[in-house]
Image (cartoon, rainbow, N blue to C red; front, side):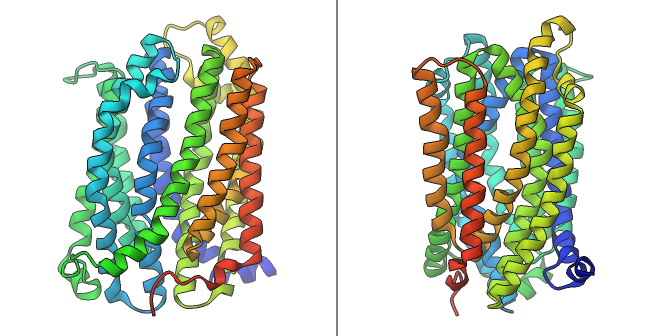
Length: 459
């Protein structure tokens, strides 16, 4: 009976699914693009797969800070919506867009540090050259991804997530076949390998920007939300946006940095360890990215409740989202345990014999068990950090991430490397400890409730 009550209640399962499911579909489409990209590259050559995962993770690591800040516009939109002030929505959106301008320029300038950056990895020269080429293409187009993430806040902050889903599905529909054609040289397209994968990904970044511009800046939206007339930089609101958004961006960056550092260090243990870890992380995106949709749903529901000055409703909504995330992640963990060979074999390159692939397969099957445990714990961390961000508790989130990433990932992995301790279990134990500390800390913070007193918007 309590389940039925929570289903229909404000902040319950139904509302969470109405907001979250389109975001999950949107994230699934991103997952499909990422997964097929790596699968196509894995089928093209083992070297391309080995290069694509570190390069894309490092590119997204740099992108993460700017995206994390820009998307915090969604919390302002949610809180102004919850407080019944729709005319402030356009003004909030534009503060995020003003942030996107220098962001794109800074990201594009990272082209020049690609070589010294990947030389630090110690990867074989052939793989390193592919990493550099892929990274440079991704980083040039990353600014478009930041802009589309910001524009999507116009819908996500108001709890209207179906338009985001439709735009994401359109991008996926264009990206997947284009990806395959540019990698393998199908029809009129040249065979570009990993370079073709990068070009297809950037096109997938640009298409949503074009769609959102036509959808957001309409006369009807101008009348309701001032999406055109409120374009000027508002120093007070921009300062508030930066005060809450920058810590959120730093947290997102550090999370990706921890994973990037993990992958780069694993590469030093050997090619089999690198290939199996890359494949497992690619498979893990099947669980992770859709759950980010629920993370955003938690931020939206908490933001709207806090805008309406109802912290109890914010706590109730977060718990509803947590239940849904645990159910999904539990199903994915079971899939990882029951069908690890099937999933790993998707990354077997054309022309590679089963005997040659067996070393990667054997290690990958073992690592899938780690991934299953990681998946369940990560669900808790993902949802609670979404709730804390929606309430504006971003400084605590940032500080927690700084300490955890350093003491659970960076320092231990450096120690393992210096001590020359072989074996893949050590690094994977570090990554499990990392997510366990995050989940425990965020859950404890949320339940204690200091976030209830934070005011993101004025008035």
